[in-house]
Amino acid sequence: MQSTVKKIALVTGAGSGIGKHIALALLRNGYAVALAGRRLDALQDTVAAAGEFGVHTLPVVADVSSPDSVKSLFATLRTHFGRLDLLFNNAGVFTASSSLEDVDFADWKASVDVNLTGAFLCTQEAFRVMKDQHPMGGRIINNGSIAAHVPRPNSVAYTATKHAMTGLTKSTSLDGRKYNIACGQIDIGNAATDMTERMEKGILQASGAIAVEPTMSVDDVANAVLYMANLPPNANVQFMTVMATNMPFIGRG
Image (tube, rainbow, N blue to C red):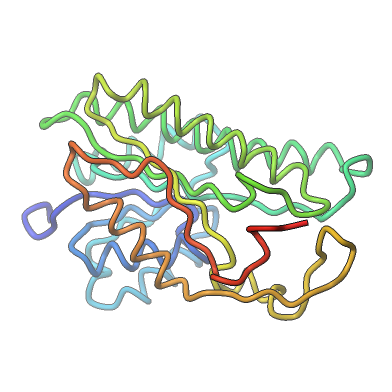
């Protein structure tokens, strides 16, 4: 397999939404892709959507919030592909919208465990693979969010984890230098997937109003990630924001 592809990638949360679209874009552009997610049926849907490129996939059921599950994921990847060139940390959860004082602790913990700890655990294992392979090094791209910059109302858990993702990105960039590991972050605003249909129906604004928000094609996100992924080892996009042009981000509130 390695003779027919350019690079090996791992995408977490690859069974739906942005993760699925990024995985498909990578496959169509010469990557073999390990697909990680909690549901095998969703991962198999991604394989089916890949068509002829599905032969270059490796679906692995994994819970990124579990250290043991992440270790098993990377052991499977290493056995099957032998190396890792790109990790796209994408897995994330949106817990129930709630004012800060009413946030359920279980929702807070779920957000931190998946959105932040999951990205850390995968990054840690990616380091262990990338520093030992030949040639040494690789690239990690973190899916931040517009929420890494500005919160929406009633989103404290999600927003806090996405702000923390920026710190993880910076530390990964710094600590990865000695291993030739580049790390960047893409902050996405209102990409049209099955998870953002509510934007087109109306969503709570900081003013208290409910307003429809514009969306953009998820293909534009995929193209941005491909650009970041395909840079040579001596170049890196540290942070990129890709958003629907007229969404209420600049001037939000």
